[in-house]
Length: 302
Image (tube, rainbow, N blue to C red; front, side):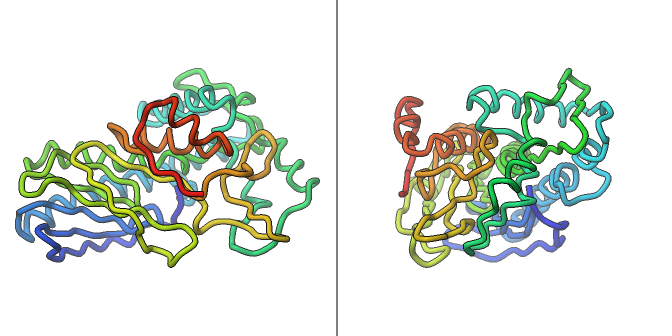
């Protein structure tokens, strides 16, 4: 979860047969598309969405001082007791770590100290990666809910699940507050509160790879549930014709090779969709086979 603190502005504009509320959170543009109601109701629902997104960002962003993550990361090897919400995210992260055979690891964020995916050819040395890798590994953590103890120098980062978690929380809050169909879109990860009444489905574009940034080349229909996307369209390194995407293998400290450029997955919740798209990216060449075995609807770009 990235960002240096949200800009707390909300905008409301008319869209195509809907109203659109917008704000920024977690370093992403966030939209709330509300079917068949006016600007005032859209502003109210967007306010609910923004408050929850900003709350989650303030609590779990690694860029915010003295929040839940900062207290864990600065503990210097001492045990830290966490609240129920943080404990649930840690449990989910531990489950993903197990399901991925160690491929998903919330302690791998420290690898950003040597990897910067800015489109350049700045590949770190093997020695530099090996040094940082000594501080990576969820198996090295002692997690006995609600107490977490990391070895000195280790850190956690919820960036791999934070935005999807926020989409699900916001979608649920709006579902409880309104009978309208609302589409929540946080930087391409989205959820729908209920099936639309005035249209067959919400239409969502999947961004093309290799083309103009932000341009969609596929439109899909979504009535309920959620979508999440993982990919390296904007974060990569390129050296000697080899593309290094930003999905890192926490066991080697190096990018997963031969992974798709992007994977979009449809599921009941955004958290579930994000889990599947991330696990598929970690499979590299075997991404499609993994998703086929999971029997989910997906769109894979190479």
